[in-house]
Image 1: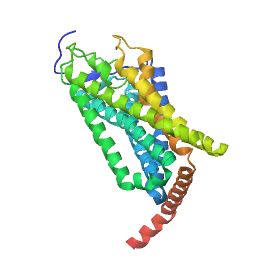
Image 2: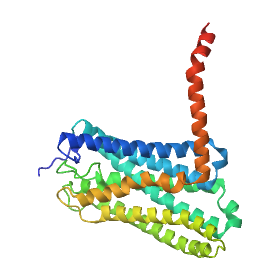
Image 3: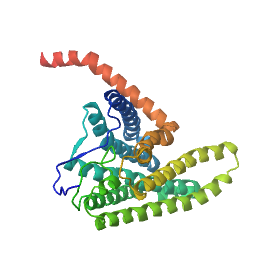
Image 4: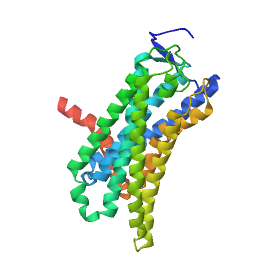
Length: 325
């Protein structure tokens, strides 16, 4: 490989070279993307427009939906466009933005899931002190802290990844992911990015340990609930949270810590999809759409939107004609 320290673009991985398979990939990603966007937008709208849901738990869910929406919007549209137009190109600045924003949104998912574990701990183990410990001011500070730390994390990765020149521009992934990008650098030792990875590992490990420690008293308290229905309801909200958090941590750690092969690998692609696309797709189902209050708010919001749309469609022209006359 020749030294190309001033690259203007990179070449992303194609899922297939056959035109029909490229169209199939575009359609599959389009369906997934629309489903993810629709589910998360419904949750954001329901919480934002229903004042009864302006509580810590639902504010956390709304922010989780915003982060999931941001993550897939950074990754999937570019991959779909490349498949649709039979190209692999992504500009240097777009690649920098992808690294920054992907780390920002996905790491904020981990930190927010950790905060949500603490919220569940207070609600189940200290219900009498919940209003005092998890008031709106505390909630806002936690959410702001999540965004600030995530932005710092993403900035460190972006700066570390692009701190050294690249000797190739062929990225063995369908978006600008950090491990395949490091494989392209001319230096065998990228100290800034190693520091960013260590920083991320420490934070992720701390979140994982915190969540595990938090869930021990939660499960003890739940096991003491006298009614079977009460125990089942508590477990139905806690177990999915723990499963999706563990899956997120494990697949993301494997994707970033295992040695990166020289050629594209189906295993690498699988782990990347598992931590970057599956959680944003599953989070609305696990945390929100199964929730009775969210369902009611979404129904009311859709009903109001439908009435407003048809009202504007039928009466808007008459009103406009009356005003102009």
